Image (cartoon, rainbow, N blue to C red; front, top):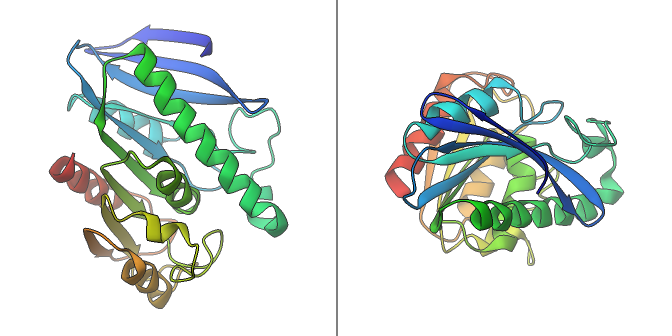
Length: 235
């Protein structure tokens, strides 16, 4: 970890740092409960054009830290405080998607290792929450890491960064060892109901489908609570 900044809040420590991964510096924000007991680690990942400092990452992470979880997120490639800021590049550079997914997967695993080296992380209780792009990048990352116990992938379906969920070699097939909830919106403008259900059908292990009213950009308490309830039950 580099550029470590710690700020004491009420019962938790706000931790900001930069992590060097494959020649890039990855900015991260986490909230760590003031306890020596091993705690679950939950990564919350933002959608496109957003960052780790938006409310559905920062504020949610702070709230969930009061449950005794270590919570936070990363600035995805080309987002937030990354050296190269170009948020829409993720969505328009189709030829670079495989490289981008592999990069983010390495960053997620490196973050877990760095947090576990510094804090009392219970590596048997890792959780992940993704919103839209955070889910599309998160599914390959969680699959590649192999240590996660539970995840809630929100506002996502097959296609886009994921490709066809049932194809041979899809990262979806590697999620069998964990509990996965898919949170969908009934009026999602980007992922049809059929695309979301195709992703859900392809999931091999314990799974749950949770539908909510509204469109793709409506990331409110309903989405957050659906993700939080799942992690509370499974971690």
